[in-house]
Image (cartoon, rainbow, N blue to C red):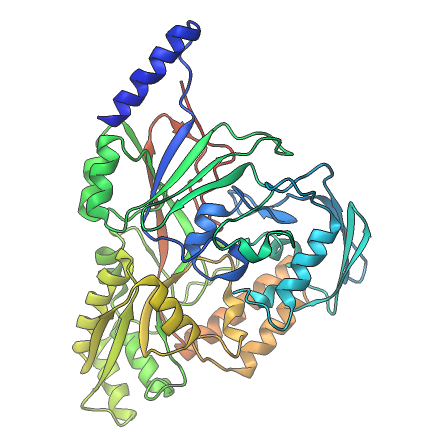
Length: 492
């Protein structure tokens, strides 16, 4: 097996150079979806950040493994008493991987670019509060907000807010250039993306010299790759019936963690008949979450009743708002004038939880007279048709962005949801920094979404991490969509 060949080779090198056996310095990680491109500031696909966040690209701040806000390219920051002026003190001596210097001008370029009228940033709303970005000196930048925003340092830690340089911004989709501990080496499209350790990194150098992200769409192929040693880590993979086999093998560590992935039956709220609340309520009553969790997440998903992570202290359990009740669902359809049911479509991206969950949901909807035609689509087609063009009826997807309930206040977002009462809560939340008050507002927002049955709220996607028992430093949970390799190493 390849893993033993690698170990043997390492042993030969160690014998030639000294008595100690050198630890491995390469790692192959399997991931189910290939990124559509490699620029975190220009795409919504989680797979982009899963390769590049904290590894190649860095922001002013970063999100740590426990969801905490940490310094990154900004070593510190202060905020004015009125909460509108942030002053970031930047690290000095930092270079981009192409040799150009990082300074305050790059921060201004990045933030102005992200909030520009022609911005292609998938999370442009993160920057909406910014009124101006000013360079004080090469190591100091100020950001003036139109209104206070207690979440601003957290927002600057998203992958969509990583700092890019004007010299390389236009080519980052194919050849990403960042400031992180790894630099881009190669992208064999359809196969793998390779990163290598960056020389001269401003912070603690990475222990790994090379990391390859291997694209393995099918869990049936991922298991033999893991068992043979061709792949040493599957940081976020649904293995289904094969999981017990890996769990019983002492060569591997299996960690069941949490994510920020609210898995939903996405619904086009402006498209008839889904613009009728009674129809959406009927669908909510038709959903048996336990059956979906068992069939689409190996039983590891945590049921949700709104768009919020159960791991968050502000979470409110609203799963009882519309309990599984097919008879009630049929009554609601009758009240909506659809006693005979109707036909619809269900577009499913190529991930296991969506394809498996889609079969189960289609069966559950059929019980109340809704015939859902399943339409499998590739990830790029899902982003184009569903997310961008809003050309869909129903879909299944997991929203892995951190703490993203505010997306429901975006008028052009693909759910086509519009509720002034909800918008008012989010507006107040953006102006509030007190933790207790923010949590209360989060609770109000969750209840509005649950009552409106905006989407079918299914479960929080579990993070099933599997890797060689000698590998340490991979994240057990996913507070943000990332495979952070900065602390990953092999134990001798």
